[in-house]
Each structure stands twice: as structure tokens, then as C-alpha cells.
Length: 497
Image (cartoon, rainbow, N blue to C red):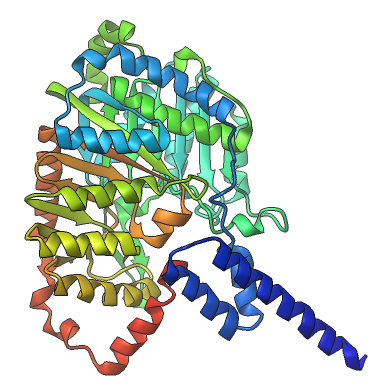
């Protein structure tokens, strides 16, 4: 028995060494590699458990065959050809569109009707109205589908459509919807809705995948109307989130940004949903009835009042970019880096979490030092203290380069928004942090249209009016030494948060 301890120590040492070699061979960013090395070295046993759950890379794994992907992209290619005559992009927009296409073969599409939503009171009635008008199919992909009053309202609307013969498919993230009861989803299945969890976390098969989550928020109705943005299906977007204890409980409102597009522009969203559906269900859905066809333009325009949307004088070109840990390239991150490097006048950004990767941090600082008006808006207080502490050192580093940091006051700003030079904008699910750029399955819609870009710019400026410029908070700039030291230590863990 005396040798059992030495045997266990030997086995553990070999496992640690193997994990370290795996981390080194993954060719991650040096900061992330060092973070894992420190965790494995100075956190015995716990570090190994954390690595098993959160540290293993899946970027090199092919989780969908090239043949199946070609089948799923064929319809959107045909739609692109149909609307190619109305495709007009300036040189800067063309370069970004070309970058995204070469990385993942997604194309720019036109939308004639559009609407932007800045809170749940605007978005969820529009979503319910679109669901009510659905005639063929409803596809929803969401990180959180909450078992609350709003979740039940949306679920009941979907059940009613399923009973009427409409095809309804729902993807929810197993970790994001951890607090939602299995009975909630079972009741949807019993009503005829096809419901799938993304990468269910079941020991032992999927435990190493717990770190790779589907954070996308996409909805497609009849291949005609699509929604994308940052809002999950949860009542916090209409009631706020409860904080405090006892009599000191209070709610803070949630600010977020979602956008609706129509017509050809929906095909990009549809393709992304069907790729995810095949990924988890192994059912290849590629029929033309799921994609928008310009032959139906007259029918679509006659029914356009059902969208309660504003008609644009010219089609707005949009392009969906998706990214995931299985992709060979960090598509959305590279899109942001290109925008920051090519910005001439300004770049305005909103994100709830600011833990930037080295390429993003470098691009932000370079743009600001070049004289570009770079503004970054984050919440006054994050919804996770560890993230807030880790974020502060990055914030102070960008301020030194001339980036203007705004702290949003009224509540928690969950919006993921970027506006550049009245020319290009983006709305989606991607935060400016390691998790979104490297670990999550994300989706962001790039907008190549001046009118839409100016609307999103005005939304940023309205939020800015409800924010405090960080220069006005001298107490944050002159934090005690021990607090700054703690924030710098927590920063080492930022690639893991």
C-alpha cells in the first residue's frame, strides 16, 4: 500500500505533462497558453479538472462534412445569383465581404424591409407577430430559452403553430438553458415541435465540450423574415434582472440590440440555422421551400405589412458571419480587426464583456493612436464580478492609447454593436472577449448600408447620452494598489472566463 501514493502521483504527473504538451501543441495565443500552464501548475487536481472541462481545443475537428456543407450552401448561392443585379458595394465593403466569403463561403444579400429593436418590449411583440403569420416553418436558435413567463408565452405560440401543421424547429444551448426544466422542452415536443439541445453535457461523452457553446440568437420565419441579435428568450429583457437580498432586492433593466431583415437577406440566417441543425440532428434539410426565392417577390411585397417594418428606398446589403471553435479561421474576430485597421473617421462599439484577444486589443489601440475616434461602451457594472475585475486592466490600457470608454448607467447593456464611418455596421451575438472569438458558436450580421448604419449610430449616441465617460470617474483611475494588483492577477484568467 505504501507504493499506491507514489503510483497515483506518477499517474497524475504524467496526465499533467500530457495536458501541458497538448496546450503547447494547440498553438493558441501565448496569453491563453500561459494561463493554462499556470492553472495546471499551481492548482493541483482542480487545474486538471478545469482543463478537462474547459481547456481542450476542438478547432481542428471537422464536425460537418464538406459534401453536406455544399448541399446546405447551394440554395443560398442560387439566391445570390438571383439578386446579383442589385448588389452594390463600395471598395471597403467589398474587401470585408470578400474576407468573410473566403473564410466561410457566406454571401452578401439584400433586405428591403428592416427593423431595429433596442429592448424586449420592442422585439418580442414583433417576434410573436411573425410567428403568428408563419405558414410553412419556424426555425429558432437561442442560447437561453428560459422557463419563465416570457418563455412560456413564446413556447405556447410555437405549440399553436405546430398544431396547425407549421414545421417548428428549436435549438437551445444545453449549458445556457441549464436552469430550464426538461419538462418545459418535453411539452414542446409533445405538441409536435422538433427540439434539440446543442452539445448536451452528459458525463462522460460530452464533458470536454462543456466549454464550447452555441451562443447564436437566430430566428427564421418561412424563409422570408429573419431576426438576429443579442436577445435570448428570457423575461430579463422586459422585467430586468433581480439583484440583492431581502428588502434590498431590485431589478435592473437590460438593454440589447436585435435586428430584423427580410427577403434574400434571410438566406444567410437560414443557412446558419440548417448547418447547426445538421450538426446536432444529422438531418440534412436543403429544400428550396426553406429559402427565399425572388419569384415570390410579389407575394412577399403584398404581405409586407405583416412585418410592421420600415421599407428602405434601396435594398440594404447584409452579410452573415459565423464563427466557431471548429472553424479554421476566427471569422468574426478577423472582420472586426479589418474594420478597425481600415477605419478613417470613427469606430463605435458596444459590448457587455470586454476581455479582448491580443489582435483586437492591438487593433483598437492602433486605430486610436492613428487619430480614429474609437469609442467603447461597456456596462457600469458587469453581471459577473470576476469579469468586471479582469476587464478593468484592459480598459485602462485602451484609454492610454486614446480610446474613449463609456460606462452605461441605466442598467445592464447586453448589446453587441459596432458602427464604422457611416459605412459599415454589425449586430449579433458576439462579445468582445476570448470566449466569443475562440470558444463559442457565434453569429454577427454585417451591414453594408448607409441608412441602416446611421440608425445604429444614433442608437449608440442615445446610449452614450446615458453613459459616463471614464475620465469623469477619478476614483476608478486612482484605485488602490492592492485593487489594481488583484485586477491584474484576475486578468491572467481572462482567456478562461
